[in-house]
Length: 127
Image (cartoon, rainbow, N blue to C red; front, side, top):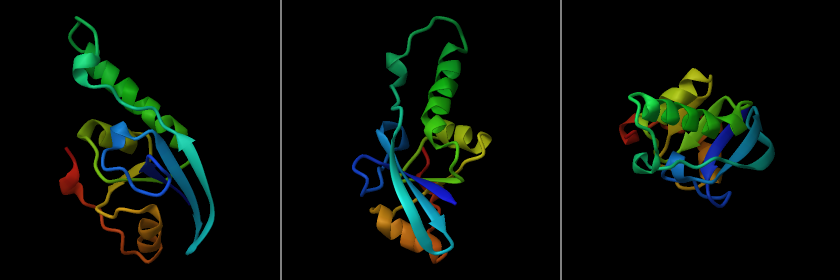
């Protein structure tokens, strides 16, 4: 199973999904880590940076942006982040990737908790 962790440095879990520049993809087999791979991730722009006069253009731009952010991890079953917006959450779910919002700071700690069945999902941290 491959799990993508949202990160800047490959060590810490980023607190905001959209602003992170990387994923650390961890391949887990049972309780063992088979490998790790750092992948680039598209960032997000703020709504005021988007252009368009037609109604629906911003919604379409958001959907496209979220799809682009998920493209590098299509082979992952789970993405772990320290925070995420509802749009990104829904987009990931629709693409078959389960988002998990955590309060754990480091990827290694989160992996350990995940294989032990102790990594909690904090949906209250969605925004």
